[in-house]
Amino acid sequence: MLIIDRALMRETFQSSVAVTLIFLVLFLVISLVNGLAKAAVGDVPVAILFTLLALETVKTLALMLPLSVFIGILLAFGRWYRDNEMTVLSACGLGILHFLRPVALLAAGFALVAGFFSFYLEPLASGLIHKAQSSGSSHYQVSGIIPGTFNQVKGGGFFYVGSVNHAESSLSDIFVNNEQLGKQGVLVAKTGHYYTDRNTGDQYLVLDNGTRYEGLPGRADYRILQFQTYIVRIVPRVAPPVPTQIDAMSLGQLLHTKSRNAVSELHWRIAKPVTLFILAFIAVAFAYTNPRRGRYAGLFSAILVYFVYANLLAVGDALIKSGRVSAAVGLWWVHGIFIVLAVYLLMRRAGNRTLLPYPRFLRR
Image (tube, rainbow, N blue to C red):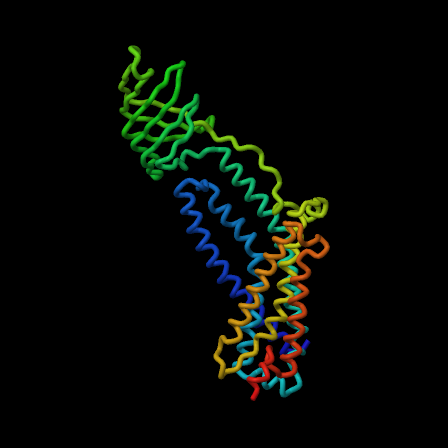
């Protein structure tokens, strides 16, 4: 391999990794903000928030890699064009087609990584996410008490908390409605706190200096009691067992499952490494930079092609799920369109022609 090929592969690899890291940081920041917002209202248990964030990151990497490599190739070739290195190499007999081999080798390496994520790590992460969410919902965490909502208590009934201070495990404006020994009881307390029994794992609300209203309104046996401390046990939430989701199935399970969703998931996993490989050659065609046209003129067109590709894959996925496209065709018709497009663009670029021919009336 020529030194110039190794230099191109090294620079493209560095650019692709840098773009991937930038995407990861953006994803982590956005996901963390959204996760904290959900945890604040109790939609996500705080105890598994960062576990879910890590697993979601693993799932997203397979989607990031095609775009990261695409942009990495555009940036590497774009710099060589701007610095006239490609002009010098072309004068030495190394045209654009010469660089397809190192680009193919680099794309194949990244495609293997994307395939590993897509076929193994991503379904594994999906399965762990479903288990974590099921476990988090089946064991009610008192630290996840949501102000302004109603929750169950042991023996029947519910409780309501106006505000919660998790740092001090304190509660305020507490209202409990439960039934004991056949009598309806309502408890009201201005303050209280919560705790978990270390031996049994049971979770309790402790009401301080409150009032209990016992009985049925309008009857003579209605009683009002003052208390200093009243303890109420919270009912743990028991979630039904979660069946294996399509996105968590292994490759063997998908091959033995004949449903449309399973076929769609299989083609979607295949699409990630295949898309990366095809986009690498399209990036070579769009990487040409004319200093008079601006630094990012080709980049915007290339990104537009990427989004058209991604949206056509989404359309194809929907067609498979609806049964309008057979399992044999799958998403290959989308890949076929862009393989033809890549060959066409590379041939025009190799002939020093514009990627899209101008209409005849504009040539005059």
